[in-house]
Amino acid sequence: MNDYKGLHAFILAAKAATYIGDGAPAGSCRPASHDLGFQAGLFEYLDSYFGGTDFIGEEIVYEDHEPVWGMNYYGYILKPDKITAAEVGSLLKISLARMYAEGRFLGGWRYHQDKWLYIDTSQGNLTRFSGREWIEQDGETVYELLYHGGLIS
Image 1 (tube, rainbow, N blue to C red):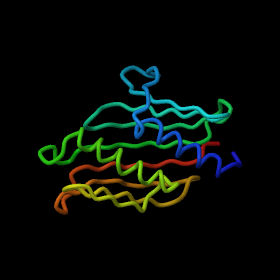
Image 2: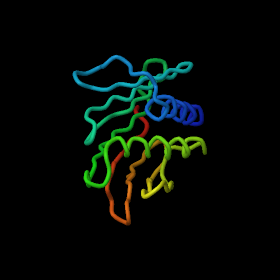
Image 3: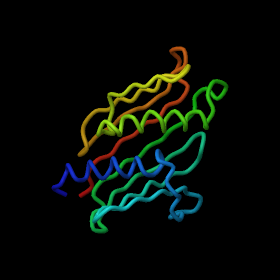
């Protein structure tokens, strides 16, 4: 993998077209998984996750059928009396779509909507990173997701 700019652009397009863009589900690759796929040129993307309110997943990018990049994530609602899974999903889609529109998918992002504040922070870059996203209501964390990933060789 030498085309980091091409990989970065593909990841942005794939993320925007799948979960955030309400992309059509792909066939489940593992029992009970929810899968979303995207393809452009030699690149293929698969986001495979389990659960709903509390969920775990993995995104993999293949170049010419070889895995070259991946990310694992685990998200959960901390205060179900203050935010629902549907509200989390809606806020994530709006906030992340705006971040992707700026040409990036790693941290340093804040978005305020109604009574919620979405925050994403990360360390590293496309090649190796870790991060956390969370939603606050009145200064209290009501949802959190941890993620990490990077190049695969």
